[in-house]
Length: 209
Image (cartoon, rainbow, N blue to C red; front, top):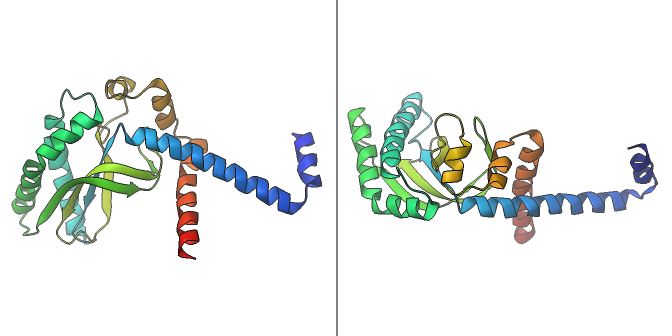
């Protein structure tokens, strides 16, 4: 460690900056590759509330619970994300009806839109795992104007409630390496995941200039 410190002290600061940027880019590319592989095996859930009022936020969670229960029933026994996506796509009408019925039961007259579409997510830490930032296929439930704070988790495999099970993940196509990646949600992994967000911000700035 002392020798390494002496090396950095002798390097010009510009070279240190270049090396640091290069290291950051390498980490970001690694994380981006990991995210792409994971995105092929999961389907996220994204619920947007009508507004940030306390009532609308409470309604969001009630609709979430109903949609999750319906999705869990539909996806029982499925062993791959493509199969799960096909079932969700075929049952979007049913899921929308489930959400609409809960909204009506709670005394609201909001419309609701349910779709299966690609969505950008930031790095997200759950109870026992973390998923890197990136684009994922997601079941999106938009209540009313959809202008309130959102809520997200993983609808396939079912990771929204309870602890993450290695058996459940492997049944859904996760390898042992995938499992180690998403469940070792320590600061090191989360930092690597967040480098994707930094890289994305840099890309946007470069294209904007």
